[in-house]
Length: 206
Image (cartoon, rainbow, N blue to C red; front, side, top):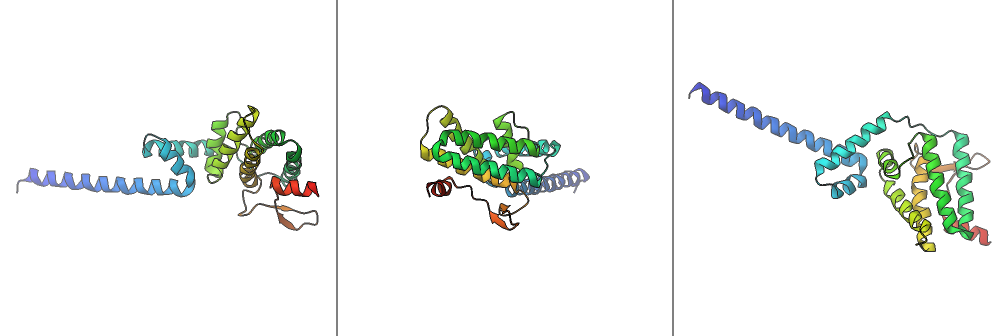
């Protein structure tokens, strides 16, 4: 066989190996992004023109997140926000619309104190999705319902759902290093955070 034929065969083999290696790398990259972003990965893939575009966006989010100085809350700040949330819950009974607006502002305050930029909502959700991908959709839905409330287009049930959506992100922002959000009673024992407006309404009624 002529030498040039062997050269062509060798080039073809190298090309095939390169393609296989590239595909394996792409699969690993996709798998890592799927594992990290969970439902947010699927949401973005479905919304984007292509999987590559969606994954490029997620990579960009990770790069931006690396440049942010995100820090945990101090114990004093965590306790203060818990008290603020409990106040918002109590207000929900008499003023659901006002309580949801306050909850929205409270979420932004927590984000800002932890180091997330809060000027633009879409950017907030992108930044939050890197650290809290499984609750960022709750935040979007809560914000949507809050906006509907501000425009006068809401029901009490919608507002209750907005509070519950906000609660999911609020819990994680305050207790990001724990599997189950906890707060401390005055005696030092841990208890689960109670942020259900329904239960708050029941306690107030009694």
